[in-house]
Length: 283
Ligand code: AMP
Ligand code: MN
Ligand code: MN
Ligand code: MN
Image (tube, rainbow, N blue to C red; front, side, top):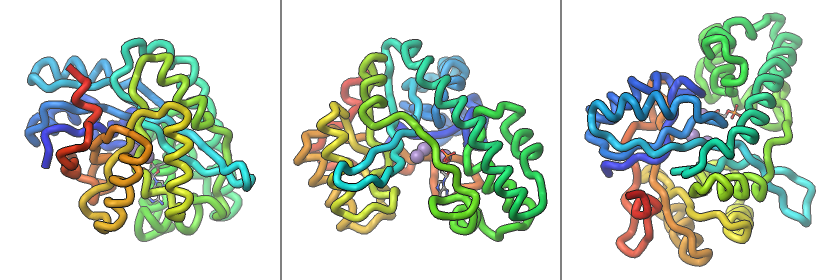
């Protein structure tokens, strides 16, 4: 385990803990540097910084931006998450994040309308309550948790497999920012752009390579190393791509809380000695 975790969620998006409780858990876990990277929102960062000042942890301001890219030869659009870190001018991201939050709020209602047609039950009120009444914080993992709580599914993953993922009956496609727009916006905010969990998009090795190439061409800075639970061959593929496209590396657990117990705070892979970590520029 490292003492740095650069990808975590609070209940400002689909995490379980408040920003303050997340910081306390990070302290108890022995972390000295924590990035709070909620989905399309930086609303928890200041709260985390205040809590961190009390226990001496360093908070890196962050946000995980929902983005998309496509291969020019095909019309297929692929979702991709870009973690933005350490913005010197975070306010310049406000406009973009407000737009994404607006998309989130509308999409949540549309997903619930689809689910109501299929399951004859309106889950929206309880999902909105789970997000403390903030419609623009609702993610598909809130919706999956509501389906689980109502015993429509037995496991969180089943909610995605039966209803919520692309190609399934309650999937709603949306125009998130493009990869290029996302990287540009992060650059304007004077932050670092990190390609999040590159092996978690269900892409072929060819498409992973293509996505990483596009990310680097557009000026992306770093790529997240896959967790130790991934096969060695997968981790080596990302090591090779980082080297080939001269990307720095980032390490983060993608911690959410007890509803995703396989993601543990502070459990991050060990970078190779020659790899340049994004955290080395944080001083
Ligand atoms: P959203 O950004 O609203 O589309 O929600 C995405 C979130 O749902 C991700 O950050 C994950 O936490 C979770 N998620 C997405 N796909 C899956 C999946 N196949 N299985 C479990 N959780 C998922
Ligand atoms: Mn999430
Ligand atoms: Mn993600
Ligand atoms: Mn995440």
